[in-house]
Image 1 (cartoon, each protein chain N blue to C red):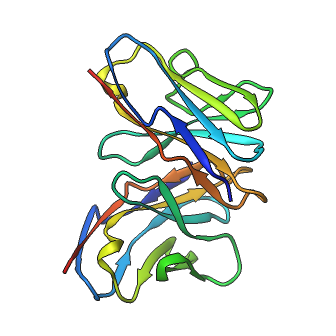
Image 2 (image 1 turned 135 degrees about the vertical axis):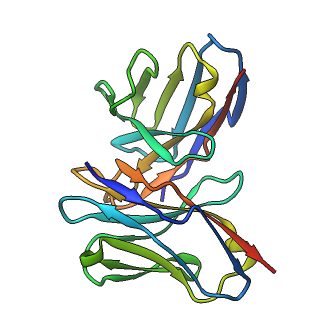
Length: 114
Length: 114
């Protein structure tokens, strides 16, 4: 299994500012994933982050808005840039378990933009 | 593109009653299917998964799911619901080369009456 922690757990931010969310895993993993869960909605994949290469973004998400770093095999950050109230969501980090057959999720970062 | 439909947004059952949560998927090849549970304020927990083989899969907490290719369904069942099962349940499908790129259904909120 993989234990994932995220910081911060929640935050309240002003529009126009940026927030960086950290994701730490207790083991080395090849791929890390960032999801967004808007209020009352399901989870949507934002991007896939591989160590040593640029993140791959899903349709509707762009690097300028959600820059991602992946400096090593246990850590990643997601920045939500120039925030608006529409960015209020839970942001979750996830990783594949050993063998790739199980996906583990972090506890999420609950973001409220005023 | 793959998609997942959970027709029931909200289900209410009495404690001790049986439960079935519906999930229909759309995917061109053999799907990898998952059920996750999200309790209030908690992260996502994997209940069970189907990759191949026996179409009836057993999961944690007494849950099971049956894969029916002819109906493109992967319904989740539990013979006797406990009050602690109250949560939101998500069906998800993975495709392509990564199990981590999940497409989630809209979720079903389960309320359990004593």
